[in-house]
Image (cartoon, rainbow, N blue to C red; front, side, top):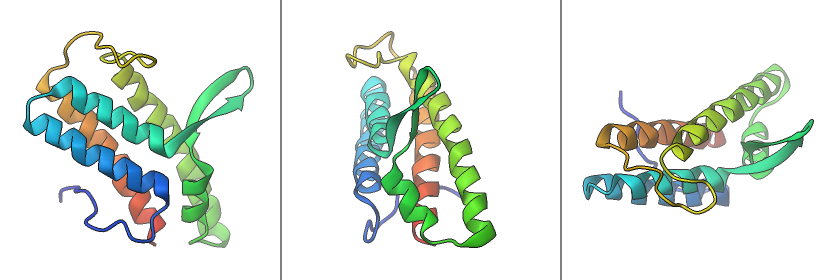
Length: 141
């Protein structure tokens, strides 16, 4: 079973639509063997769906409220509580993937730290795709 980009974005919150567009461009970059730009576009996809939130003395990446609210509005009771926790866990996964991306491309400048290999770009794009696809499916439940 493969994961693929949604064919339609109807009814999705804007941050997910923008993330899908960025991912499509990232996969085009992989086809064109431009692995650094593929990672930059995957990072952009993550930027569209996340924001920074103050937790203690740190600013951390979390899924945007607009996306979370769209998803959680589909569920009630125990399911809503469960998906709240799932989304909080996904926040951590996003932070981990984002950290990996920044090993290749500097966060503030889009400067290439060193050229990623095809395997790096494919892995990062697949992980990003998995996250975006999951959020899309939860948004449509």
